[in-house]
Image 1 (cartoon, rainbow, N blue to C red):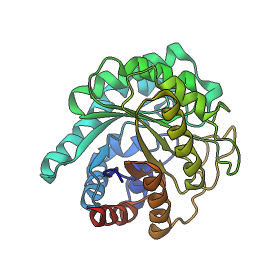
Image 2 (image 1 turned 120 degrees about the vertical axis):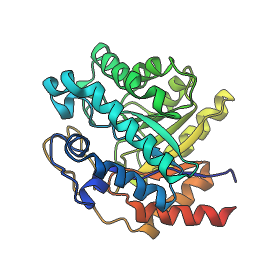
Image 3 (image 1 turned 90 degrees about the vertical axis):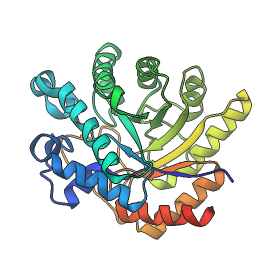
Length: 298
């Protein structure tokens, strides 16, 4: 059994839980703009729960959430502000916690049909340049297609810091594991091996689809005689359907208890996952349960 690192949980829903200003379409950027102390508090909550990696709150620093005008005026500044907040919280905590720079979907979550490579490269480059000097590692989140991963990998080729790419999967159990684009996960893994990626993760997908996803990764890695770190930060959403309007509605949460999520995590770890945290609806209480379990493994 390999060592385990605990990632933080879902920033947006944690901001909402602690009373930060939070509405569509700004999502987690609203607190960053209006009340950044809430962003710091959310990071601190996850660190106190036992997270060893916290992710910069730059997920919504894109035109999809800010709008084209506000993004053009403040997108880069807000992303750097978010990175600075994360770095300051870690410094004040006096704990050994890594800061992960965030590269979100440039043109909309769960919407691979909206992807356009040139525009995505420009947006991802802006986010990269704004955060790079403040972060320890890179985490690209909610990748929905192979083309999107390739553009992000091209941006991240500029750094020698560890880079982790996290894919979002179609929420269908007992089917071949596919990205939101419909492409097979096995093809995505094979394509990722040609990049400088340090690891592959899965996020913003229901926990039930992750077990087979890890098995697919392990199989492809064995076929190519390659290694990648494997990680998971699943959500507690109900299944997300094709064409979901991420800016138009709040996705319905279901109740995945701390112990239920822990049981999923134990399975993922047994299969080879070495980085585990949570996405939307996974709170500090879930992270604390994971952290206490991790301590029992040592």
